[in-house]
Length: 258
Image (cartoon, rainbow, N blue to C red; front, side, top):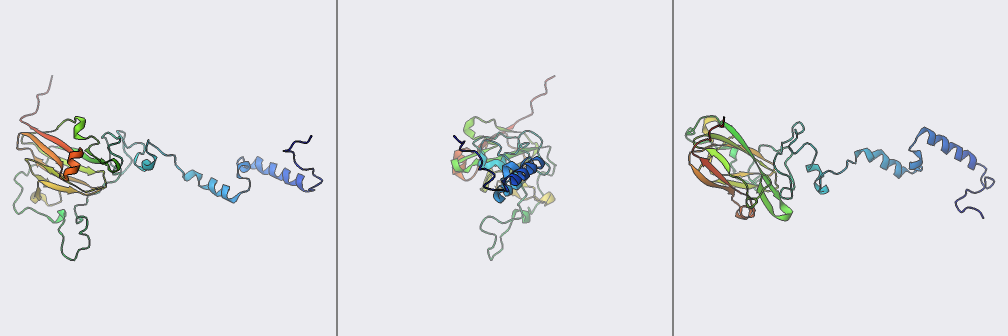
């Protein structure tokens, strides 16, 4: 009985032996030739295979947001550092956030009337505290929009987060990075934001500032009110979902231990 997979006799095709020898020679020169089978589609797929990077992280749909080096490791040049927890509470991060103080609010880009931006605002009087900030705190506005989770630094208030600590009369710079795709009006009780917008000693004074999607901005704060103060997104459904913190202004710094 003949093997069903055996080749037809060479008498049926006098050139079969030549073609088989040529194929063996080509395979010797190109180890991948046997996989191409002469198919243009297969060759095209192989040509582009180098461009198909493997997915990283647990959420393949957000592979671009979970690149190696974006956690506590050093970020790539020009990339934003993200030291906050990365979990289900923040499904995306702003890789290259920018200052958007010179942009009007959403929906005001093409209106016929003048729409002021934060970059155009100046206080009439010099700021009451002209000291440079003694330290900087960076805070990320995080979310998982599909699951309606809103937080700071990847943690909801109900997760039992520690307060943000200021010390009485210190000058602090608070830098906020909006990793979400929504604008957030961030509000601090008890103290003012001096918006760092290039106005020198006449920074506009706000108690609420809108942080646009993918934006990174800074405000200077004089911690002149001892006590515990609410700090939250003023979209109250975001606040109730977890975008809330306590700012504790302590009377003095703890003494260093010897």
